[in-house]
Image 1 (cartoon, rainbow, N blue to C red):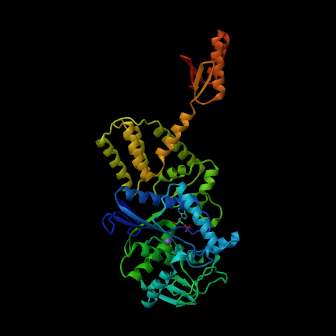
Image 2 (image 1 turned 180 degrees about the vertical axis):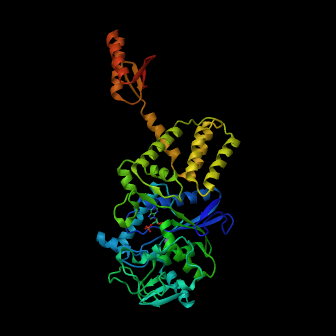
Image 3 (image 1 turned 135 degrees about the vertical axis):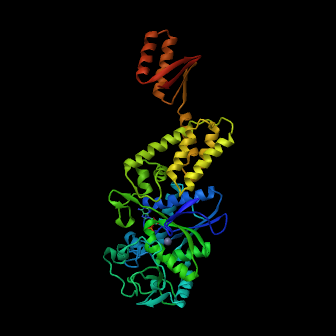
Length: 482
Ligand code: AMP
Ligand code: ZN
């Protein structure tokens, strides 16, 4: 597979450290509020990547953290802890908030067919690891203690801007949202590994450490959780593009300073979901969730198809008009799959050809929209039997995750249920599930039996006007919409 690596700024051949195995780390949600569909775009596209790697034969281990402490309202160590803010907003404890929004997050993921990671680790469960890593960074001179906090000294690195597409505006991140720059930092880009001098007295979660009672910085969480479960050599690290700086940049700084060797091979960043007003963001307060979509009558998988139709490295603008197009496309897809019969013999060579085209699309830096086109190609194919088409739809859907076979089955059941039978006096009417029409057709039958042909013809005309065609059969009639 070819994968764009943000660290090298090129599309590279994907070669994991251990042949056949892939270690994959994803920055999990900060659980102080519901995830919005922008956050979920990131998780959804990462899910497709994971599933494609599995499809391609790799044994993937995926780890995700849950940020339940340490993520301050500015990404650059200033402002309040987002979790504390969430708890205050809802008059609950931080742990109650964390549990509630973690559960809500995974419920949303389930609705979008995003697989539950192999390991999910809340940040609050790893304090000893943070202390161990920070202690070594202090001993080796990469970290310093100032003003009550422990900082990472970025001037000790030869190369800090790994994703070097950042400018002065990014550096101003520390003074965003009207919060003051931290005077204790030796360098503007230094970042906190451990807070002991909380800027707010009521910080809820604190732990003892060699530097005093306090709590970890946000970046150290991901480094330690990744290293604990995936070892010293990570294959893929993912996240939304806003995480590239400072979060991922700082993860690399501290992990490589700690390990003494390169850490993660491939960095995959998902572009944002934007609204007409700019990036969709939790801190803006107003955002669209999976529940919002459901309340408006959308199947969450319509949103999945909407995301699949564009490339993960391109910003995607969300509008309901665009979503409606995806909805129409999804319904059509399900309808076409539902219309396939389970008949036909397997033409292995033809199936192989279509599967190869699908793999090529996804293997080219996860070209999901081309992958969806490859699915349409299968449905249109002249050289595949219906049974072969169904088999391929099922295979591709292991990656696309659109539940096409399940939805098609439900649609078929719905159509079957819609055919009802009504009978009276030995006269049977079979139709498409409408009691009113059944009654009319029955009355017509009775009129005919009574040789009241004028009434029978009048009812036939009435039915015709309603778009119903009646066919007489032995012992009754069958009607259908035309
Ligand atoms: P957070 O819960 O804020 O820590 O964010 C969870 C994930 O969503 C991170 O990987 C972010 O980079 C990502 N993210 C945040 N906003 C958006 C957006 N508008 N579009 C896509 N991904 C986003
Ligand atoms: Zn992270």
